[in-house]
Image (cartoon, rainbow, N blue to C red):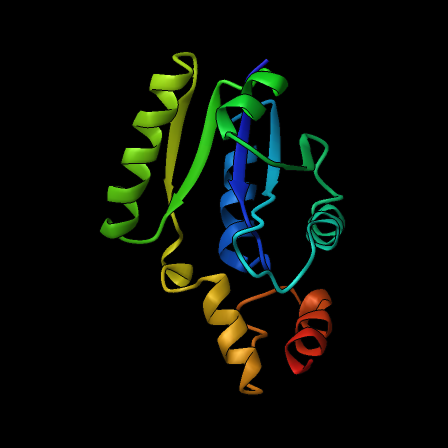
Length: 159
């Protein structure tokens, strides 16, 4: 069975994330969308909230599972018997950083490979940070995130 992990903070999940999830889910038998527990980052949503949002948005996919993880991604990959890590690339600068991480992961766990997918052109500019910033100024975020999570984001940034 080909199993992959698509890790991220997903705070909040964007159409760019969902694009990579959908496309990568077609390449493997099973895809874990892995929500990173990162206590160093101040998040808009808790881990449980992000897992719940993603689980609801991805409920129509039989081969996608959503879980949180802490620690090293390669340890999570070993635990799930995954052989691939999926990463989305928006720009050349993303590649430079992701290449280093990919090489480090392969050094630690020689059975893991990284699949780089370029983001669809319509989402090349999009990030969770941009969504939060636009929302904080009352801007329209309907082009960036699913309609079902817009009220959650707006309520949270108003606090």
